[in-house]
Length: 194
Image 1 (spheres, rainbow, N blue to C red):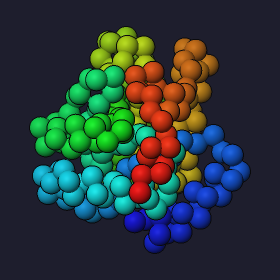
Image 2 (image 1 turned 90 degrees about the vertical axis):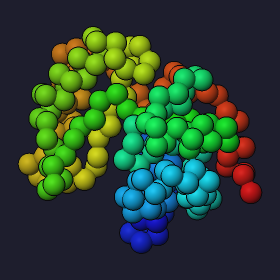
Image 3 (image 1 turned 30 degrees about the vertical axis):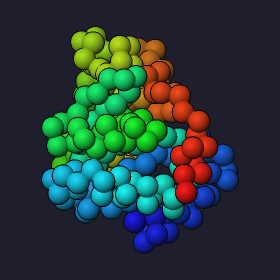
Image 4 (image 1 turned 45 degrees about the vertical axis):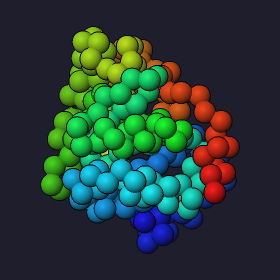
């Protein structure tokens, strides 16, 4: 929905044409009916239609979905969801999507400012590795929100956190489509789903 209103499709097309190293994945058309999570997840068929609507509009290549406002997973035949999203997670899996959540979230406050500093986030990511509390051992999925980094004071926070983990600790960052637990899918099935 935002892709139309904010000329997002043109931005996506430009990024695709320029060969940017960015993975575009499905996060729903309406962002859970404009953040009405309970009613959105209550009807899995309607929620599926919402995800497919944006799929048809933006033509995502990667069969990866992240549920709005919910940390649900369906990877490698493992399901980790909340009660409210379990039926939708199973449905999305059955039509060929990987439902991907996160292991560590960089939270933001009401003014869209990061709650944790870059140093705190680096520690949280490292703790997730050492506690073996991630969905897949030795892999941590980090959720950040782009709006947190729009102000000059916080703009370089993500780069700082990445530099701390890469430089001092030797961690390697990969894109979501390289996550080892994703099921391998013929991408043409989703891209040509009409």
